Image (tube, helix red, strand yellow):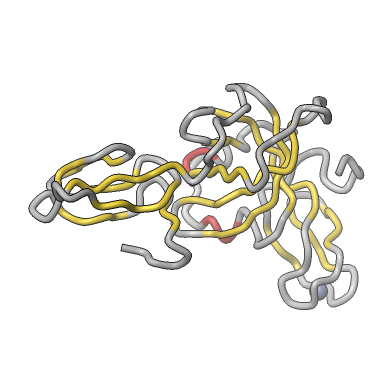
Length: 187
Ligand SMILES: [Zn+2]
């Protein structure tokens, strides 16, 4: 079980079905229990393990909404995004620190083997809501993906050059799942 800040994301291993019974926000696979939503772990007195939603207020997002957010954490199979706003609906408020996930299978069309090649820590991304309840996002379409990124070495500004980004200062080249709106100043 990943401890970290106590937050689990879909797919995180929680324990085995010998240790616990399955509570809310949990799914089982071959005797192992995994989180099916973002949240914090709770174990009831009846030894059920459950994942309580991290967001207290009900999500105001709808399926198909396009959101702007920031990559807060990169795990093996998911990127954690904190959502800043819904595109085109600036007046619609989003609960502070609403967190969503982009699974590795929803990053781009085609197979992705390494999430670190697609996103960087604190990248600004544009993504579409696939599932408003589980807060799952996709960046598969051409206009979706990274809008703004920093060089991981020198924190310089990264400029788009074809399919990759290059640092203006140190000339480092970094791969990303780039939105076609990269660097257009939409954020
Ligand atoms: Zn640099």
